[in-house]
Length: 298
Image 1 (tube, rainbow, N blue to C red):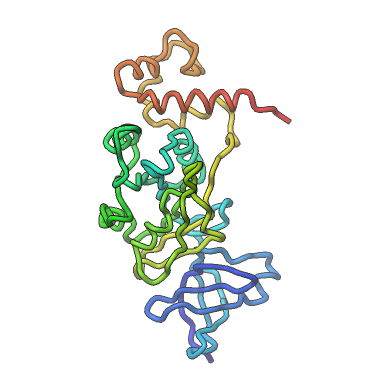
Image 2: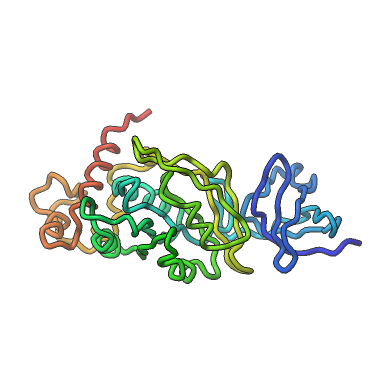
C-alpha cells in the first residue's frame, strides 16, 4: 500500500492538481472519482491527503480533502487567511477610489487586509507622497507598508506579515505584483509585464490562481489582475460599515440612517473637518454611495 502524505493544492489545470508536500516537493495529482460522485471540487488552497503513486515521476492521487477553515467564491480558493492588496505609488499613478473598492471586496469576503504601496523608488512631487498614503490608510485602521520590489526595500517587512499564513495577493495590473512575488521567494518565477508608455497601465501576466510556497507554513496566492471593480452586492446604507474611521463618529449624527452627505448635523462630516476622516476616503465614500443609490433594482 502506497504511503499517504498531507499537502496543499497550489494549482489546478485541466483536471490535474499540483500538490505541494512539505519536505518532498510538488506532485502532479488526479482527484479520486468519489469527489465527482459527491459533487465536491478540490480548490486551490485545499489541504489534502495524497497517495503517492510514483516518487520518481512525482505523481499521486488526492484521496481526501481536509476540513476547510474558509473558502472564497471569486476566486474559488480555500483556506485563505488574509489579503495583501498592492498598488503602485507611480506608473500607474495610485487610484485611491479603486483601492477602496478592493478593500471593500476583501472585507466582504471576511479577509483582513494589508495594504502595500509599491514602487517607492518612483515617488516624486507630482502625486501624493508615500507618507501621506500610509497616513490615510493607517488612520482608517489598515496595516500599511511602503516598499520597492525592484530595489528590495521593505521585503523583510512583507515577509514578517506573511509568516505562518496563506495570503492572497490582489491589485490592478502593472503595480508590480509579479516582481514582488519573485522577491519573496526563489522557486517560482512569475512572468512580469511591461507598462504601456501611452496609458501607463500594465499588462495582465497572471492567467490562473496559483498558490506559491514561501516556506513550510507560508503561502501566497497570485490571482488574475483586476482593472476595475463595479458596485457591490449591498444597499447604500450598508456602505458606512466598510469605513472603519466613520464608526466612532456616527454618534454625532442627528438623524437615524444618516447618509453622511446631505444632512446638516453629521458626526462624520465633523470628523472630516477635524482630520479624523481623510478627504480622499470621504470623496470615495460619496462616489460609491452615489453608484449604489443609482443602481437599478430588478
